[in-house]
Image (cartoon, rainbow, N blue to C red; front, side, top):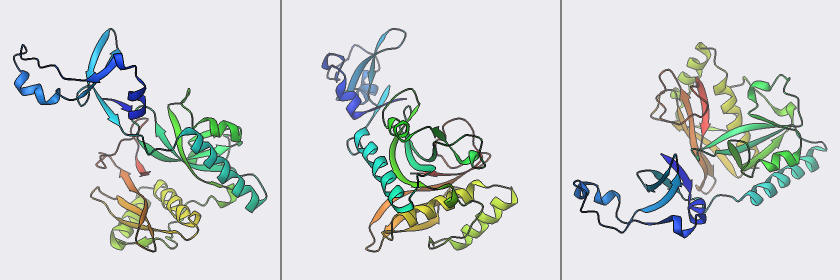
Length: 267
């Protein structure tokens, strides 16, 4: 089903969108389908001819009113970059960002390299390469890429990228047996994606400057976890899943780009 944001829908000229108010008792099955049409939002599109789409049948409207605007994301990127440079005295190599896919509107945590060659030892961890800070900021706008940057979490130096380390630091593991069994399973299949995801969550905790502690708990899907940023007063920040995409994949999570075997973070 086609997805469209609320702001995109509202930007459609009024002559091409509206509310279904017409009774169609001339249709034999109108009594059965009436509830799926009456009062629903509609829009006209061109797809091998002009057609009318009905909300819930041909398209879905996603409320983006609380999403960060492109200018806000760019300011966030600039602020985190300046903070890193002032504290470290050098420019960072990576930005850990939240992206939003343009087609599904789903979000994903990724690592974007800044002014680095693709031929490096961390290449398998990099989602995208930028040649400058301005290039990175430009990804907050819709353009030729099939994603946008929806948020910037922090910048990092290549010397701080630690992999293949499953120690949990100060993370609160609320499912110790499940965690140990999952780690054991990951090692048995020669997987490294779990350790990378754990390190990324640990870094979230570090970069919150003591504001949040990451809690890891069991999920219904095999070898999977739920997680949450939890403040001292019990309030929560980001909540998501550390999900295992097995064969078959029982995580019920959407993965863009085809089948994937391993663990990934979803928010």
